[in-house]
Image (cartoon, rainbow, N blue to C red; front, top):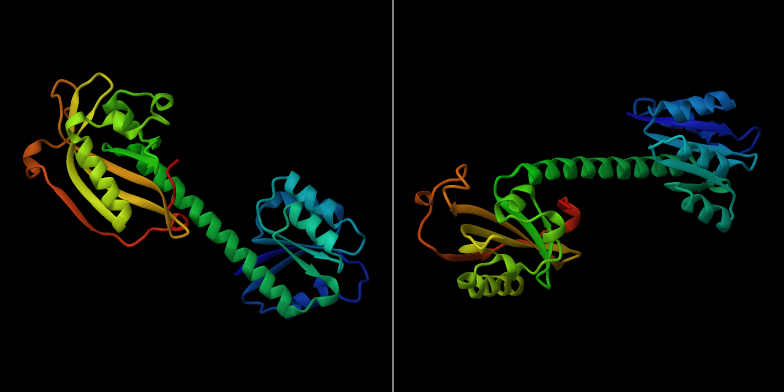
Length: 280
């Protein structure tokens, strides 16, 4: 069920949304119509509609659109306009999700526009919810998790990584990845990154990271590329501690749970950034 808030200022227009909405399936759409100024403000404030349709024949559609946004209305807004490109552009720039030309109004065009903008809004809301959950997971992981660009500069790191390596976030952002890799592991990490990007693979290695204080931290490092429009743009790394100074770290698994140092690579299907929430 889609709830429509119809802001009806069409007056006696021969072609209006009001005259066409009754033809929509009643089991799929619920229409709440308001025409008086007080009722319109209450509708904007209620935040109960899935979509708002502004149909004004008095030329104040853009003002009503601006007022809806000023009152914090988050639902997508569809505005009925004249067959005037400048008015359509102004409406889109002011935050309208779609525009319907009055002279071309049909029940089918109204239904198509409403369904499209509602579906898009729901997809955006779902993506935002996934991002919040991913961020919560990112922040609560005990493993070191970070991302770096293709030039090897760190772009994000979770709280556990900052704590275990001894850095603050301002210090770590923009730092070269090589600065947190122990000297003996640098060749293997560099080779693994090249393999991962050239062959589009996920790599798993046992290496040593270097803390800010100079301690060596043995980890099992899992790295994979992040894609945008089919092209790798960043690398995400998950490093699980397998050996650590016992005086500092006691909550991670001991090294007996893991095999001897190895390097493993296997093919990973490309992940599109639009399907994966970023954690930064």
